[in-house]
Length: 234
Image (cartoon, rainbow, N blue to C red):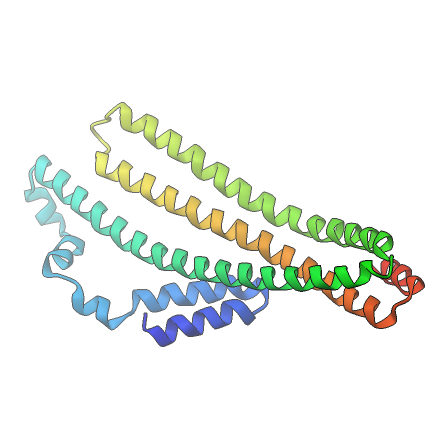
C-alpha cells in the first residue's frame, strides 16, 4: 500500500460508522494484495512454487518431491497470509492509539469540569448520572465483547488441537502444514484481541463524551434541578 492509501484508510477508520469499519479494513487488504510493487518483487521461485501442477507432473514426482512441494507451498501461502494480516494489525494498532489519545484528552477535560462542579456541591447527583450512563454503555458492549471472546477461545482451542496433532507426527500431514495453521490461528487471535480492545475503548470514549456533554450543560445551567433532569433524560 502507498502512504496515501494508508492515510486514507486511517482517516476512514476514525470517521466511518462502527458497522462499516470491517469494509474499510477489507478494502485495505485487497489494495495490499494488488500492489504493483508486491507483484514486481515476487521472485521466480515464488511463482514456481505457486504454479499448479498438471496430473502428469504430479504422477512423475516421487513421494518425497510431493512432500517437499507441499511444504514449500505451505510456506508461501502462510507468508502471504501473515503479510496481509500484519498490515491489518498495524492499521488496527494505529486506530487503537488514536482512540486512546482522544479518550485521554476527554478524560482530562472531564476532570477539570468536575473540579469546577465540585465547587458548587453538585457531585452527588453527578455520580448518579455517571453510573446510569456507564450501565447503559456496558450493556451495549456486552454482546460485542462476548463475540470477540468467543473468537479468542475458538482460536486457542484450535491451536491446542493442532499442537496435539503435531506431537503425534502423523505421516499424512506435513509438520509445515500444521505450523502454518498454528501461525494463522495465532494471528487471528492477535487481530481479535486488538479489535476487542478497540470496541471497549470506543464505548468508553462514547461514555466519556456523553459525560462531557452533561458536565458542560450542568456548568452552563448551574442548577441542581437541571442535573436531575439530565439524569432522567438518560
